[in-house]
Image (cartoon, rainbow, N blue to C red; front, side, top):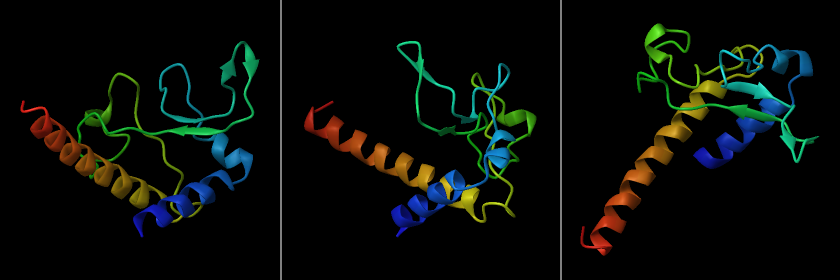
Length: 115
């Protein structure tokens, strides 16, 4: 299933060597990417994260570094295919399925509210 593929892809990413993940580290110019330095109540968390979002162009087929995919919070940063095979492909399919489900739920809620 897509959900098990997504879990496997995420597990694969977070199993990469630390140096590989650091290549995707978010920065002052791009808040999308890997980070492990989040603070909660001014104390460092023990978690690792990878922020990914819908591209600025809303077109997943355009390259992540394409100018049209720049948006307020930056551009997506995915691991290279050799290090994490099919990661981007699975994450994109997961995002698309979540968007489809969100739209379906919104229609059902609107109908229930008679909007």
